[in-house]
View 1 (cartoon, rainbow, N blue to C red):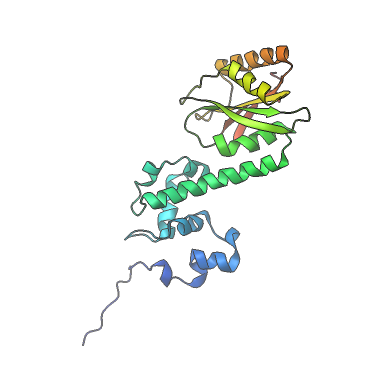
View 2: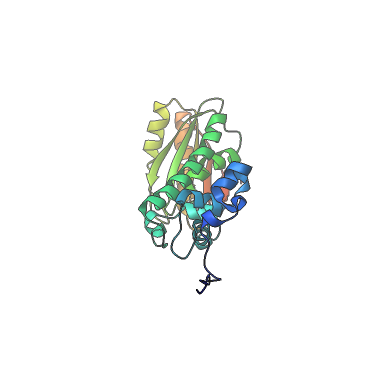
Length: 236
C-alpha cells in the first residue's frame, strides 16, 4: 500500500490556520483593532477563490488600491467584480462597509454640532467627498453660534467642474434661517489650489451674502487627505 504524498505547496484554507490567525477568531479573542485591514475585509467577503484564501484575496484588493482605504472607497461594484472570487454580494458588502465608515466619521462631527475651524469642516465633509471621482458642491448652514443647521448638496458635476446656482444656496439659507454659510467642494484631481471658477463663485456668494446679512465664513476645497481654506489663506 502506497502512502499518498501531500503536495507541499498546497494552500491551507482559513479553517486550517492556527486559531489566532483566523480573522473571526482573532477578532473575538483580541478585538477588532488587532486585525489588519485585509483581515477585516476578509471577514466581509467570507471566502476567497480556488487559489487564494479570503485574506490573500483581500490583500490583493488592497494592493490594487495602493493599500489605501480611501482608494478602496472609490472602487465601484464593477471594479470589484474584476477580482476572481468577488461576486456581486461580496462587492456590495465592501461598498456598504466603506459607506458606513464615512457615515460614522460624519456622525462624530454632527454630534459635536459646532464648527470652530476649517479642520472641523474638513472632518465633516472628507468622508463625503474625499474619495469621489467627480466634483460635488455642498453648502453648510450655520446659526448665530456657528452650530450646524444643515448641510446640503448643491450640485453634482464632472471630473473638473460643477455648476453652482448661487440663488439656490441663498433660497436654502433663508428657509433654514441661517446667518452663516460655508461652501465646500472637492477636486478629484488631487490639486487643492482654487481655480478661477472657484474664486469667482466664492466672490459671488460673499457679495450676495453681504446684501442678505448671511455671512460667507469659508470655502473649503477637499482632495484625499488635504484641504484648502479660503479663510485660512486670507482670501475672503
